[in-house]
Structures are given as C-alpha cells and as structure tokens.
Length: 129
Image (cartoon, rainbow, N blue to C red; front, top):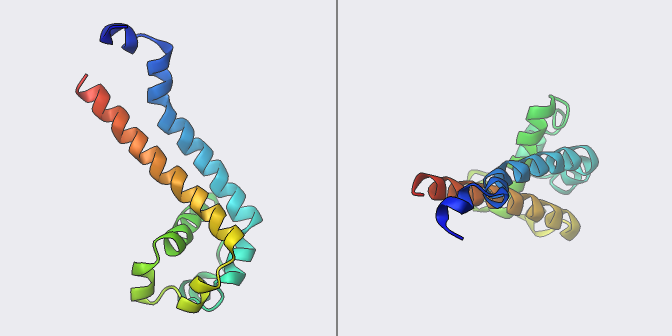
C-alpha cells in the first residue's frame, strides 16, 4: 500500500478521528466520575486544603466546571508533588486514598495523556506527510 492510497483509506480517517473520539469518551468518563464518585473522593480528601476551600461547591457549578474539577483532582492524586508543595493536598489523605478511586483516576489520566499523544502523532503525520 502506497502512502497516497493510505491517506485515502478509511483507516487514515479513523486514525485522525481517534483522538477526538477518545476525548469524547474521556468527557463522558469525567461526567461519570463527577456524578457517581465525587462525594467519595471529597470524603477521602477531607483534610486537603483544596477540598476544604472548594468542597461545598464541587460538582454544583455546572458541567464544564465539573470536568475541570475532576481533572484537577486527578492531577492532585496522580502527580502529587506540586500539590503537596503548595499545600493543596494533605500527605495523609494521599497516603490513605482508597485504591479503587485511585484506579478510576488512573484510567482518567491515561485517557487524557493518550488522547493528547495520539493527537500530536496524528498532527505530525499529517503535517509531514
């Protein structure tokens, strides 16, 4: 299969559409997390400054804010160094964070990073075709 034939095939269309489809799945998963597991996450992080300040309004400010809150909490748990340094995350809360919730947030972070890497790869392939 030559390069010109590949770019006219359905495989190329799906390859280029993949990051956007994965982003749509990621948004649906964020919606699921914010509606089903946000209370358990807030309870697990009850000593953290971020939850202390924003806890009463988490999940109540609208759809876009719910997505952003889930991304912020995912960052706090999966890459905790900066959150620990600035004091948003309590080290005891991080240590005692439930494994099943951490697994759900790990799935979220893999989808976010995966869609970003896939989008960059698709862009590079199209740009330098």
